[in-house]
Amino acid sequence: MRYLFLLIFFVFLVALGTYILSPKGADDKPPGVLNPNDVNPELVDSLLHGIGHGHKIQNFQFVNQFGEAITHKTVQGKVYVADYFFTTCGSICPIMTGQMKRVQAAFLNNDDFLILSHTVWPEVDSVPQMLSYAKEKGVIQGKWHLLTGDKEKLYDLARKSYFVLKPAEAEDVGDGNSDFIHTNNFVLVDRKRQIRGYYDGTDSTEVSKLIKDIELLLRE
Image (cartoon, rainbow, N blue to C red; front, top):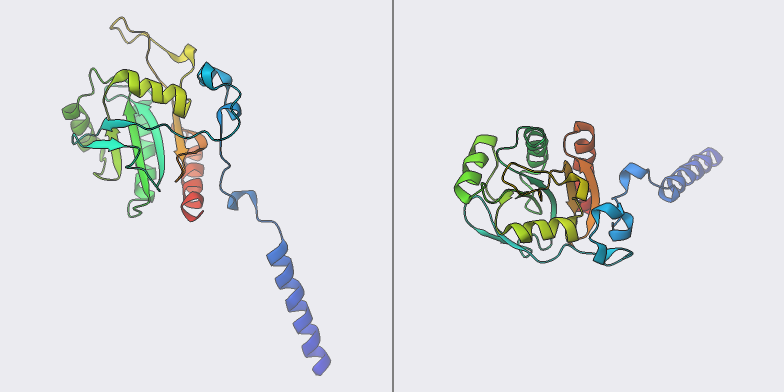
């Protein structure tokens, strides 16, 4: 009987050690940090080419749908997702908004997570326009900020921080201005304002992966 007990105890110890020492699956690991040289060079401002470490989202200040100032300090110590859209978009933006609502719902009660959606057309997307859109789409105050402000600063952030604009993606919206971001990327940013991933905001499978990765970063 004693030998049987020792055998069972030995098997238990071996099983426990195997579990502790075995590598975790890839799905259990948070995504790594992305720097300019990890991204398609076409998306990166030429001044940042070749940088392989230390990239962080630059300081910023815009206003949300309630006219409140939203800055880099708003996301300090938080995980967040950023994207670019415009309220009158009839192509990919409605799909992206629907997918972003899934993200909002998944982390509705987590104060360490936010969503920042930047307009690409601030000439049209005023604060009242953004508020109307927010009410129509179910955007929740304090969780999901629709940002407007100076166009040059909005686009500078897209090119030099989030890396979401190829030159070929610029298009003419009919006002004689061909400088216009139209991207389906959701950008995942960690508590240190480092990029941790890009996800197709029109693809429900990719957004499900985004939700999983947010969970991992929140536990990191």
